[in-house]
Length: 292
Length: 293
Image 1 (tube, one colour):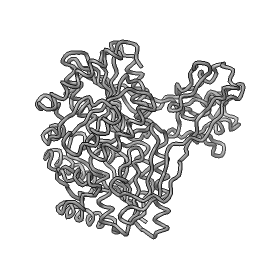
Image 2: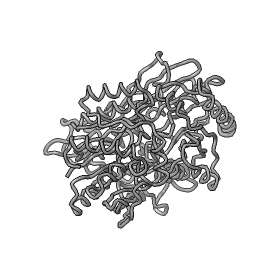
Image 3: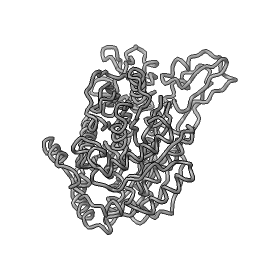
């Protein structure tokens, strides 16, 4: 089984549009996983039929029993997350600040504090409109532990790949270089970088590539909006060459991206030109990993 | 919230790439014409604001988080620390206690509760905060070291750094990370008001709804800025109307603006449409400054 992770560093470069397009071109062969659980969008292009929806619990949350609390304030003293304050009558825990470390529970003299499993979102097992199995999720507003939810989505995607005998998982990743990104890289076979020729795009790509080096992962690069700044585009090509990152293709700045999105379609379904471009890109990826 | 006469304005969005950095940098530069402004880049995983300024006069501050360090000579291997740690960051391997720095949340429980004081907390580098002073503008950027995964402790450390500044500009603009999870909540935590930047597309609308949910949950007052107005459809506009959400300004869709941004230019100086949008936004912000500061 091969896992292709689509990442960018910078947000809004076209990760989801590209992953969905690859999904359509590889229909019948792939499992799709949306690991951008913070701001998941793949479902808008894949219109999945949901078969299983489950709450996801991760980590813990402290709660104060107002009956048992004697307002001694020891909990507030030891909390390093500024999550406990004297409320109108009793000490109260601010759930979004509580990291569930349990220090307050240990020091409470009346055992008024207990820790409970914390809900951080939902995950879904579905069938995409391409007929392929799909795993995706929705993190609760402001929730912690997006990295763990990403790991859960990947675990479900692997089960689907085994169950449906698919040898390819297409993973849409999160922006940035933090825990959701690192979590999505576990078990990766190949990384597809989607970038744009802007100062920000290149800067963010460089930091992401440092992370990939740390995990010794192979990567190829797609430049989206390639004609928006020729100097930055050539700087990206130079950087990729120097880092041994294959150039997979370049997509011009194109309003068809948005037009496709508004129809709930992928760029390969609404534009013949983009279809040919993406076909060429998928062949390049195929050469690299020999599975598609 | 601040009680020092400063007004903290966070620029956030659910979806990445909607124009947070475009808005933060141009707004800061625009507002600095008439008042002292501090721009803080809290997108610590991928900070970009400094790319837009010719900033030389800088001060570098390494940032640390506190991590327990095992002292083998004091340890009796009682195992209390491993039981207290909810993050599996303190593990006993044979006759050794190992601390996994990446998993540690710096809660101090293992350290404070160790009966032998065998796990004193020690500073551990997580990134750095750079502070530039420009004409009328202070620019602060925090940058997570690439090997680090946790953005939240560095965001908190940056806020602390800003609180300890001797002179605090009356307008502080906070460029936040994308998403709706813990780094965003940490970044907007001290803001008086939040601007959510979105684009008029299905992805933009979907993620705006998530961001609005988050703001409502943490009781932050907010308004929306629509970037690339004219690119997609009018569903964002209509949804905001139906939810009674103020649209503070609209930045028209313009390929030239994308080119100016790509070249790391402060585009409002040469882009009249952006300047007009900022003019409208400045009036809105000044009202909020009076209301909240």
